[in-house]
Every structure is written in C-alpha cells, then in structure tokens.
Length: 314
Image 1 (cartoon, rainbow, N blue to C red):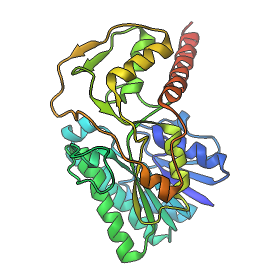
Image 2: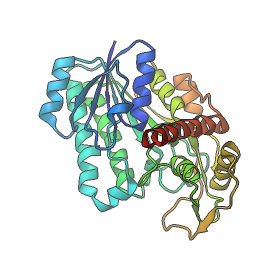
Image 3: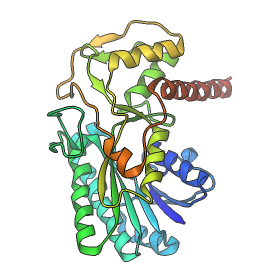
C-alpha cells in the first residue's frame, strides 16, 4: 500500500514515516522544508519538496504517485507566529488542507488521517478533556487547526471521503526543535546540555499531558484500518506539572539545579490533559512509553546529537 505523508520531514511526521516504512508501506513525503529537515526523512521514502498551498504542484504529485492513503501533518505549527502572521497561518493550515482534501477526492484516496491539536479546546471546562468538550481555541493556530475538521466532515458528507482526525496532546521526543517555540521538553534538555539556566513561567504547578512521539506514530498506524469518521484524542490521560517534568529531567541528566521562576505568561492555560478512552476503544491503541522512559530516550538522543556536533567542531 502506498501512503503519502504531508509534513513528513517534520518532527512528528518523520516518526510517522519511519513507522510506516518499518511496517513495509511504500511512503511518499511532501514537505516544503520550512521547518522540516532533510536528515529527518527515512532514506526509503520518496521526497517531493512542495508547499501544500501550491495547488498545481500538489496535484502533479498526487497524479504521479497515486497514493491510497494520505496522512496530513504539514502545517504552520507556531502559536506565536500565528498571532504575528495570521494570514500565513490560515493559508497553510486551512487553504493548504483544502488543497490536500481536493486532491484526495480527485484521485480517489481511500482514507485521510488528519493531525489536529489539543489547541482546538482552549481553556478546559472540565478535566480530563474528552472529544465532546466544547471547542474554543484561543489562538489563530488553534482556529486554523480546528477549521479543517469541519471541511473534512463536509468532504465526507459530499464525497464519501473516509477520515480519522487525531487530536494530539503535548508531543515530545527526538527531532523536536528547541529553538523559537519548541516544546518545553526539547527546550529544557537543550538548556541542561548547554549548562544554562531554565526558566519556568509561573510557579510550575501548571500541568500538561506529555506524550512520546513514537506513541503518536503508533496511533497513526492504528488509524489506517480503524477509527472511520471519528475524532479521537491521542494522549496519555495523565497530567504532569512543569515542576515534575523539570525534576525528572534533573534526575535523568544528573544535573541538579534550581529553576528560574518567571512571571506567569498572559493567556497560558493552567491545567490540561486529554481523555484517551476513545482511542483505546476505536483504535485499539494506548501509549506504551512512560513519561520517564520517553524523557530518558529523548535526553539520550539530544546528548548524542550534541556530542557529534562537539566532535565535528574539534
């Protein structure tokens, strides 16, 4: 079976590609490399450099490759950039997704798997957040990840496009960018390895649902034959405070220090974690990696990567 993965050179998408190739699928990667990296892509995948807003080029790729399944991860992923450039955010996440959807219909795609986000929920009214929770995104990014969910549902109603929408919790792991608006895990590890101070905004009691990227890849694999026309949270169903995350990384790195507590940032959500019962029942999926195991694997990855850079610099 041939699967096309948009954003397949990115942090999450590249792990999905690795898992698919391990399972003997033929994989096509479409990525504009604005945030993705060539070195992330499995050498067994075929790569097409392409911005998904380029409808002509995207059509040509679909026409040439004729994939059976599409897994859509290409996106503008920065919340801060979505505030600074909401038009570009909408161009990629909404118009780009519409281009993908239209090609799915024109080329008879069997199924679309769409990577959505917990950002669609906004401030939680109750915990854990299930899929029926009211949607109130608090950023242009959250809005632009939610809007395609409606288009996908409409394309199913009008054209019979099968789909599964996966709403991810806070994903971490190897290949995540520690620069700019990188994930807190990647940022903390980067600072530890550099011997720099670590800032925690607020008192550190705020909680998140941290899920290891390989569990995300497994969820995408599980959604290929299952979860038809469903919206499903992909999470650990556990909340972890930023303080506890920091302490775990101190233990893993044998680097004990005090964090630098900074004023709480306006608009930050205090507590959030996602219910994953539906993923268990509809996808026969549940996370395999504990937080400590995932953090240890991630730390080892960045430590080895940093060692290679140091060796090259000698």
